[in-house]
Length: 180
Image 1 (cartoon, rainbow, N blue to C red):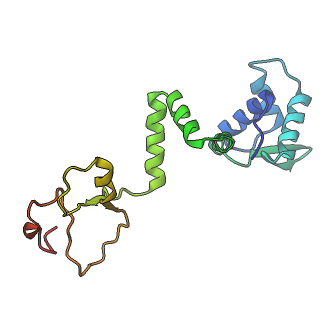
Image 2 (spheres, rainbow, N blue to C red):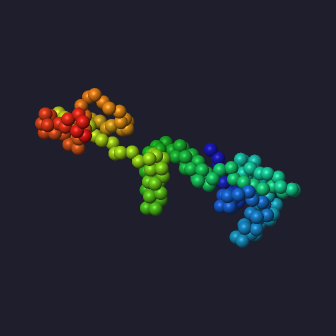
Image 3 (cartoon, helix red, strand yellow):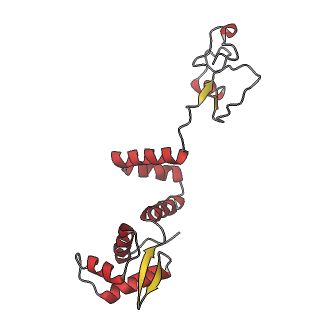
């Protein structure tokens, strides 16, 4: 895991990531000078350090170099979050606390990201009801007798299909094997 970038390293990398092309020390310097007083040699040293740390690659162009990011800012942020999360002695609690700090917009972005990672939409899992009469039991016992089909298997089974929204009152009234 890469160490977090220092303030000046982050300021330089922000420009490299934003421009998304090979950049020169002079370009970064001129942009940074709009915010602060900084010397050419300082920017050159920072870019050289970032090269040594593996954040940027460089290619000689005359007597100077052009620097280009090795990975994206998103990959950097993800690596920092992963490192912080893996350091927790209770990862689930850390995630709950992190989600609690998120704005509604961030939670929506997270929801969208989860959908992307999960791939194309799959049908909702269908519960297989317990056809036995369950009375006088707690909900945990009921949950223990119910399974969920998440295999996504669409092959034809020879066993009768007992999936339905609710368990029939009379097992004889269960749908026929092809009556999904």
